[in-house]
Amino acid sequence: MKSLMAGLCVIGSFLADRAALSQDFPETIAAAQFSITQGFRQRSLSLLRRSNINAPEAATAALIEKLCFAPCPSLRTRSPGDLIDVTTSSWSLHVLADGSGARFRDLEVEKRAYPLARSISQKTSPESLVRAGRAYIAANLAPVIVLGSEEELVPIRADYRIEGDQNLATGEVTRSVLASRIVFGRSIRGVPIVGGGSRVVLTFTNDGALESFQYDWPKYETAAQQARSLIGVEDILGRVQRVIGVRTGVPLSTFSDRGLAAQAPNYIAELMRGTILEKLECGYYDPGVPARDSAVPIQPGCVYQVMYRGDEGDRAGFSGAVPGSTQIEADPSWIESAILRGSPPDEKVIAPGQSPAQ
Amino acid sequence: MEKTRSKTKVALYGTRPLAVLASGLAVMLMLMPSSYAGDLPHSALHFGVRCQADFQENWDPVWDNYGMCTNFINTIKRTDWVDFYFNLHGAQVAFVDGNAAETCSRCGGADSVDFFLIATHGGIDERQSRYAMWDFQARAWSGSMRFGDTGQQLKVFATYTCDTLNSSDGHLWDRMGRAFRGGVKLIVGAHGSVYNGAPQKGADFASRMQHGEAISTSWLEAVWYSNNNNRPAASATGVNANDCRARLDMNLESVRTSTPLRDGQIGHVCWREWSN
Image (cartoon, rainbow over all chains, first blue to last red; front, side):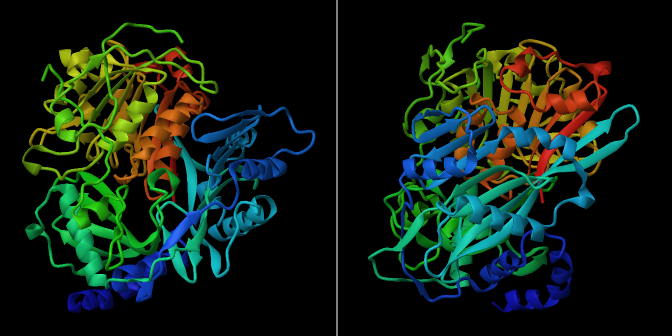
């Protein structure tokens, strides 16, 4: 801990300068900084259970009412696998079979994006995107993006779709922004939901029209089990080292003492030579519908981002999450949970074979 | 669904233990792609997939990407041919212009298929992008690549690797121009970091393409949504800027039917990416 605090003192001013360049929101940056230096703000957290706000048919009907103005063109509806698909000639909507998520794409707006291209210096500000996003959600997604008591919709980050072109004869390069994206998450009694669950993502073209949205937005209820005690930041970092060791095939004995340093916009921790923990975000871990076992409760956890850089500059990123409570619930779909419990993960993967010619 | 070529295909079913399947391509079956309502009608393309998680003597760390590759194959095989799913043992020659392995399907050659997906560690210098092979400190180098003018004439080179489509330093064409000059139509990858985990991106990428989304959009969205910190990018060439941008929007059908641009026919390179 001593080396950790010394590192923090040295880099404070540098961090403040660089943080302003990031499109992560200040709250996001602050939460990540707190996570990597302190872990959780709480000593214990209850487990949560995911349920649905709407049946899929009700979610679909509520969305169509907002998306398809009279005279609504003919809708084509089908139900392949675990989706309800609704399409017209100009847009498509896919609703997850459990009703907790949907994806919408407006093809007409998408086509308009290029003529509206702007120079990157004129991109929509993150603050404007937050306002536009909140307004769109209130006007069009209120039946599906429902906040429970003590829950908040929290802006997380802004991203931009950039197009570039190089004239190979002249070497001239142009870059422009075609669309802007705002990501919202959720906090419950001040605890963020981390991972891919509880996200609303809205993409706007430069004239402010909505090009697409995607959300994963369940209802959370407190599970019946007792609250779980949370581990401290040193133990969290130790768990990250252990799972990275297993995932990268590197023995733990080669890992470094974890001194923190600054790398905007977050603090980083060196796990071993060439491998750094870039980011840690602690809260309730919900990886979202495609990645989770619906029968398992939502547990406290910390999402990590680790970057490896080899001697010659080869890079590879590792992301995942470690459980944050003393007692880890069995969750076969959560690989780190399985590693730390010593049980085999539920991996349905097939390794490639070797080319018979080599 | 037109089937352009008969070929022995790899069966990629089930959840059998990794150790058994890692020993090689145990089961070979003929498998006919079939489409669902809502799929983009297109002539079945030939896909090749090469992924590498571990590296000889651990010269690069293990990078668990087989989940993504498995999900990609299990989805795309519904509509298209998957000719091979190989690791990157001894694979450098499969990417080298003029090497016989480049057009050889049983060698996993890049120009032996229409659409090639590779997942491994990546990196760049000013003149080349590099892709880690399994063999100790071996890499495939973009400066040795020329895709799309021999064999099956590769149309799409998809690379789940860090950095290899970096454009911010102005050297994208210096690095990838030689590969493009052979006529490959799209190269998708990353202009910065990509993270492993979230293997569902493989299925998402494939299913978006099957539903008719542009290949570049399918890649950008599948990779970004799987981890918002991923930095996906897609690039194409064109006679001029408008042509280049239009070619960025090619889907599984138009990427087959559009005219390849080679050498002096290429006037522009263009790219699209998510960035913050």
